[in-house]
Length: 127
Ligand SMILES: [Zn+2]
Ligand SMILES: [Zn+2]
Image (cartoon, rainbow, N blue to C red; front, side, top):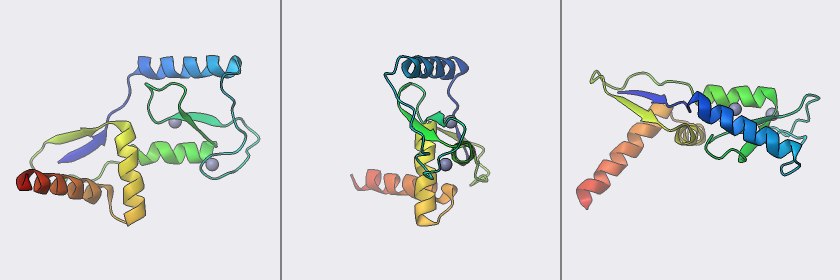
């Protein structure tokens, strides 16, 4: 079992960024000056990070360091769980949640996913 996150299409990302830029220019959205992850106030403008590119105006404002961390967190690939060769694709937003859960419980992302699948299957069997 290989686990990886899906990436939004180039067009979806471009559209989201364009819409965000327009909203900022029109004053419909205000860019804060403190990073929402580490509270730093960098001299450079914060990056608007999209968890979900289909929601163009829902962004997390991050300094470049935290922004890099977020992206690395969603692209880490756990080792294969079996030799079955099947691949499970995760929507990016869900993959970020797996990362948060893994960090909170001190487990690997791979184990978080395996646990969730196991619990789901147990419930299916019980139903
Ligand atoms: Zn930060
Ligand atoms: Zn980002």
